[in-house]
Length: 112
Length: 113
Image 1 (tube, helix red, strand yellow):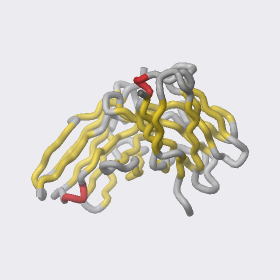
Image 2 (cartoon, helix red, strand yellow):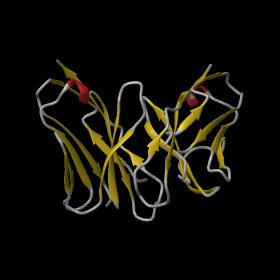
Image 3 (cartoon, rainbow over the protein chains, first blue to last red):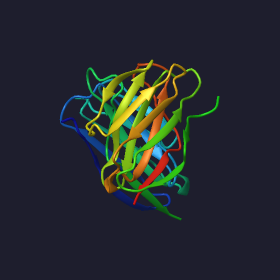
């Protein structure tokens, strides 16, 4: 079935270092969304990418959607302790209006 | 606007019992989706309801069922509970069927003993 692979599973960084998480699908995605879940919290929507090759920025966060719409990445520049949490990508496939397929997530810890 | 609310927040049941979880979406949101979150499997889609109709269903056994009411509130039911059903059950709402962001509730933590 449709599956979104996300790596790495865990990432430990020193505050100020950069962080990147990657998502990959074997089949073309209609769009991809990114969510952040703080420890003990629930997923919170960050962004949606729809177009091939799309790049969007939110302050220190940069989101990319691959040219083939099969992969995506989230890059955080100069991490802060407030960035701690699990970052999930979630993909929509053609024809599925509500069925989001989530990656397993990347758990980010930041050492001050 | 108030966010998505879920009740109860915590629940402890024993094997073989059944459970009903409730979700109230953001006012005006007509789509409600349910997810199961576990450390091993991550976030898995259960089903989505829109205007009282089930639109999509994930790969879960028939013991998992749901419904949506005319006011968009939704319930999910799990019958004949198994130990493996212990999880955080998340409800998410969105305004319509367009592929836009989902607003998640705080979840119901179900423990099956």
